[in-house]
Image 1: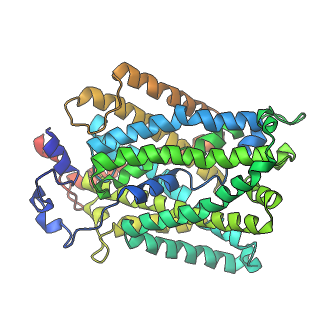
Image 2: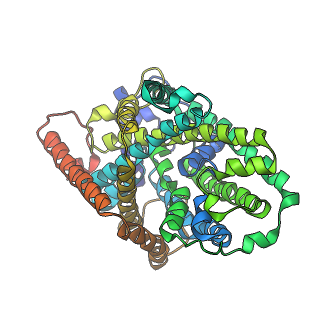
Image 3: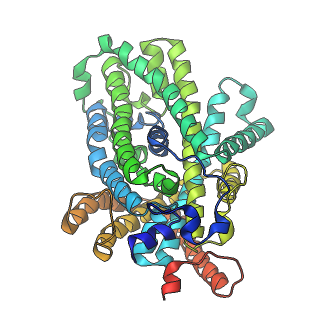
Length: 472
């Protein structure tokens, strides 16, 4: 298959060709949507991955100051950089909505494309459900009736619907909103770090931990993993990016550096300036540290920033889920309905609606084990993604790759083996309940593929025509 065919199949107009000439002029929107440019894309990636240093504190509690600092210094090279490099190469080679689903489908066929889509979608929407709850958890400190009962339930529902509507208005708005949210939520950490400079005692950075506190390696590695993960989520938006072949690699490079600094600078500042019991380093400790360093006003600002960060995380990850479903519809993995776009905002309204409904349902559940299972599914998806990346280099070496990881296949295998080993460790230490729930979700995903295949073959539902089927 030529590069021209691949670009057309992904719904992207090749150079010199208008979108109306892709073969489906009736399906094109009446007006051209605004594309994501470099700055909004950087902040969307930032919110896909981090959203700020909120949640990094347990690494200190689990392993002590020195190992926490080393973890956030070294782990990006083990995990974040390889994942970002893979995303940069494959998003520019296949610049269509769907991202990792397209990669798995091109590498191993529609079954694995569908399985990848199910794993990543379930993981995504379950994680999204935590963010409106987190917003209400912070607001209840100010508005006490939100602590329980119907006021809490109503507030979660309203916040989810409002945030979903913002997503419905378009990626250009979501992208610039992410820039604003990022600036406001990060500002108190910059101020705290500057005020902390005269109080820093560098010897505190070298502490291996408090005597009598046992290291919790499970908590330590999970904290690093989930604070520096999800670099590939932005790939599902590749079709919405202006000049993706140039913009994606630049945005990912800046986002990796930006995100790592956003974690490290406050961590160095607080560890060096504040002396507390190691067990006090729980999630949210940065707000308490801000009060110790600068006063109550900065603590409040960081708590407000946490709410804004949760909003940014919600918007970025909802966008990824919605555009992933559209990409799956373009590949004929899902019915054509899932690729439907709003007439007003040209956004994938079916994907947004479905993701929102699942999010609302999950928001009212005690879903600790389900979240762990979703993370397990994400790990399975990442193993499939690494395999797809290496296999596509071998299977389709002639495909134009505007950005190419400068390694041959043996080097790529080695690059993927290290994070893959870490994924296996994370999965091995999972609980029996997580294995059970993940297994049931996977069986459901396999059943869903064969149901969709039956519907497609018997024309029960309307599907897009995949070119590989036409060729066969």
